[in-house]
Image (cartoon, rainbow, N blue to C red; front, side):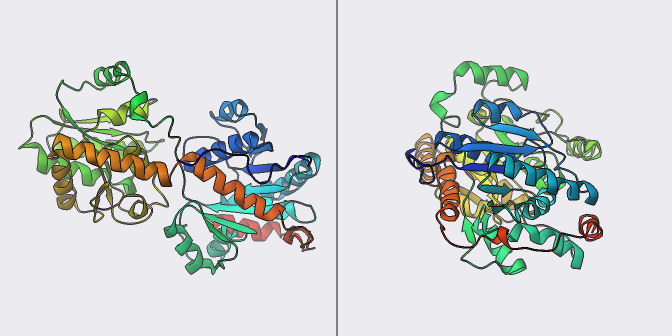
Length: 417
């Protein structure tokens, strides 16, 4: 694990740097978690952390970290609201003497880039996923995430997408994998009482082998693939249970589809749908194996990393970010996407590990995550990117170039495409 140290941009005798991060809302998700973690790191390093969003239940986390939250309608794709956000953000940049503006989503990024023009602020973006959609206007709308003075990709997979789709040059591109708080995802810190509480809540019998799949209920996460894999495994394993953890976020039709599929496979007594879990470390400790079955590549994928940090046997599909976070045959299994047979085989291998093999895998997995995917390492690398820009004394900021303001109609076309 990387030790925390004073970070390079917080220099004695100089004005504390001010970083303004922008996300649409502060809800669940990787972009939001990264924003919160970096805000805390900025404050620890002696800087001032501002976060602009249109609210959300995680605002208290920003405040507890010592940051300042400012509410603006930056979640809107309405071109006229995006236009008005330019002036609002520019006023904040000047009021707080902002040095870095860091955008993590497309609509607010357009407003942020234009707001930086004519000010001292540097513009940074983080791309969290490959964006779908074809056509001139959609490609233009998506391209904002490749227009930062520094463009952060959360995996090699995303870096390749940015290079191939938007021809981002290496001089601006930085790869910073997402990180997790190792003090939270630490097996030794999970009490037996926490595990018992979840066991009772989920009605898991004593001695059950639990296959767990965390992730919001949306089709591309591949729940149906795991359900089919469970059908293949369950007959020979009466002790086997499956827990699918995640909110449907209003996708009621998909939830019903999964329930119908579970009934069709006669798995009602063996598969649990859990809407939400506030104690994921304890949940992982209940798992005999953890699955990430996404049928589309994820930009990074926190579940395989969290699972490995907790020493659990981890199975994920062999594409996207997961391909980079699991060491095949050493810390987990990688299987082809949308392949229930291969997934069932990998789960079977995980369930058949001897106690000694499980211990060895756990030790290797935990060390792998600590060396490569800690939250501290992610924050240090992000602040180092900020420092690069702040150290460019005497160089012309791209934000100081005089450019024509955007046409609201063009913004409307991009947002609607």
